[in-house]
Amino acid sequence: MQPLALFDLDNTLLDRDAAFAAWLDEFVTDHRLDDAARAWLAAADRRHSGPMDGWFRLVREEFGLAETVEVLWGRYRRRMPRLAVCRAEDKAALGELRAAGWRTAIVTNGMTDNQEAKIRRTGLAKLVDTWCISAEVGIRKPERGIFELAARRCGARLADGGWMTGDNLLQDIAGARAAGLRTVWLHHGRPRPEAGPAAPHHVVGTVAEAAGVLLGAGG
Image (cartoon, rainbow, N blue to C red; front, side, top):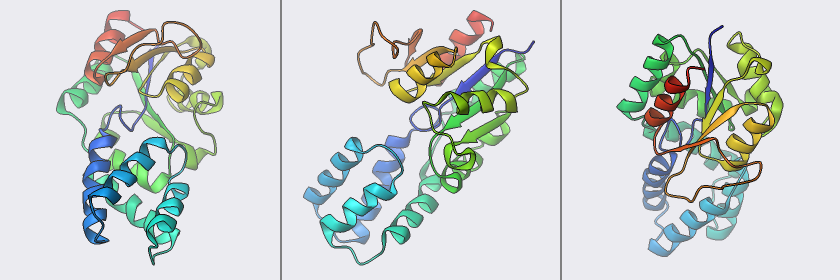
């Protein structure tokens, strides 16, 4: 039986924060906004959860932008994949997992066009067996169903166990633990929860380190 490894996309396999910062610089310049506006936008992004149409609705109202929410959001989804970057070390780690016989998948919330374009443009499509995007499958993390579907697309079952690596304690860690998976959390400098449903089994700084944990565990 091949062991199963699931990975989050944004701020796990990809540095979403860096891509968003680059996009934000362009957005501020294009709309002739000032530094105070940029700070407001960055803070609003940190507070926001869920699909970005709600975020763009707030932005449009705050700054009186002429474009519709749909236009703003569509431009964002087309641009972000071009700014996304995956670390070479993390790509190599995914290759090591597959070479060692692991089945791998990306499990991500988000819009299909945006997330799939990121996966393809960064070369991740060639390094994993499959992916599940919430808008495509109609299920969002932390719901069990999206983990089940990712496992099934890998030819595996959650009942046989597996691992989930991600940066979000609710969506990635608590959701995966409730689905019966072992978890690896990318801490990004945050303190580790020591107890409760969002307490990860392992804590690392990079996907490459996470792959080392998985290879050491052996499945």
